[in-house]
Image 1: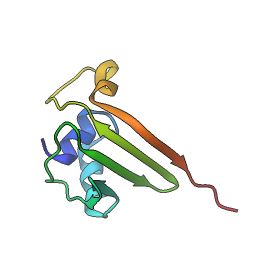
Image 2: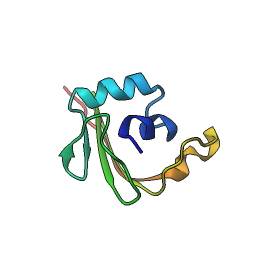
Image 3: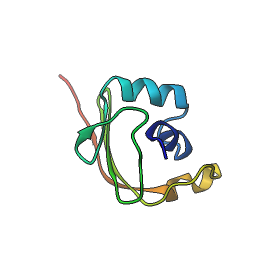
Length: 87
């Protein structure tokens, strides 16, 4: 599955166009490599998402074309979450 679609289906990012823009801004890594929106995502991949002061690392558990909102969290597991604070 395409990275931008996975981010939208998993509800990690609300809209696919936003996911695409973030990928094109080199803010997402798949298995340690900067990824473009068309990068393939499969179970076991580790995603690192950097949005402003928020950094989220997740492992893909499964991929699906559609899921209900209350089941979206089942597609991934959070490995690490950080909030940077500035003075």
